[in-house]
Amino acid sequence: MEFITVYRALNIADAELMRSRLESADFVVAIENEDAVMGSEAGILVRVPEDEAQEARALLDYKDGAPS
Image 1: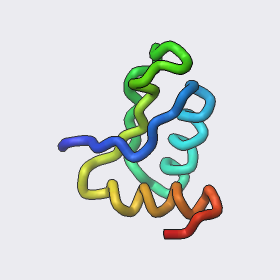
Image 2: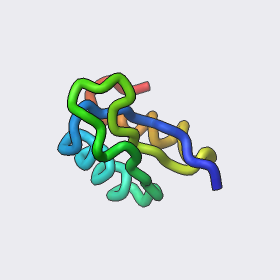
Image 3: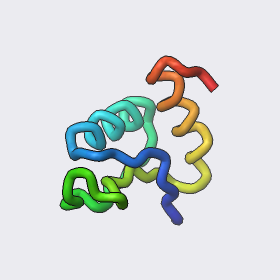
């Protein structure tokens, strides 16, 4: 199963919030680069399985007040 990045966070708290939102909607979620330095270009990656990426992005966009 290949995972796709659906959100790039600048800090672990933001990444964990997005993970929580996705997991509450029954998405399988992986976090990568948890040790990234704050402000790092790579950021902390919130990833889901490739076949769930479009739905996950739509959920995160909607929760942020910008329905897709």
